[in-house]
Length: 92
Ligand SMILES: [Zn+2]
Image (tube, rainbow, N blue to C red; front, side, top):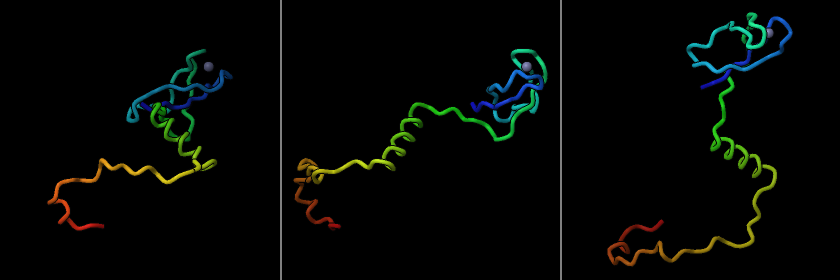
């Protein structure tokens, strides 16, 4: 579920609350003082899952420091079929 940022009308600062996208109100109560707090514009902050975070970090890392390849990838002999019928298949 996305979380939305709200700002308290009194000076409690901003806080986040999670709502379903269809149910996100424009105004909610401040958890500290109970005053009306308006939703900040900027959309929902969708919480990143661990997988998404790991992928984003890996993507960022490869942009800065690409992995150095010291040797061609090892050939695996196990993927070659020994079936004689497979020799008739077109090769690309
Ligand atoms: Zn407040």
